[in-house]
Image 1: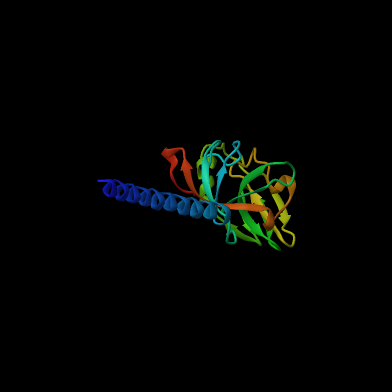
Image 2 (image 1 turned 60 degrees about the horizontal axis):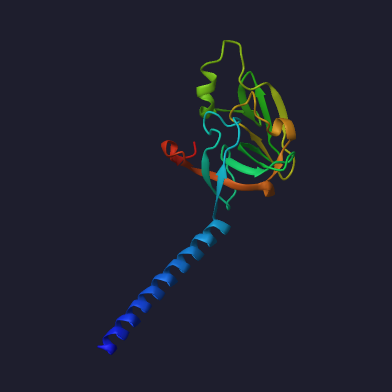
Length: 182
């Protein structure tokens, strides 16, 4: 009888060690992914309304070059916090807004993600004030979607690509908004 109990105890201990090893391995994989592949991003404020709203949480990738109109988080050049904005232009490009139309190097671009805001504007009213900006070497020009209130490259200038902490790809909170970032 004693040998049976000890064999059961040995099997139980073996199962416990296997389970423990599995949990430790899983935690190491999750930790590694969190450190090198993705990071959570939280939206603060209304500068990205209506596409991203205050307190929404996103998953951002920590690798890869941003593309035009990607949403990125970065170290704020004028404060000790993170901003989240949309990439509009890259080094050497001339960004202009004329009569609420975006131009990059003279070519017009459509920003469908602003349609919800623009539809409610009175005639002859512009959502984005006219401006012109030449993006310096190594810089990115970023804008918030809520242009009238956004503090972005129109205020603090271009940001460096090195200041980007994540390229936001997926909304995971609140549950009603789960899905890809527009």
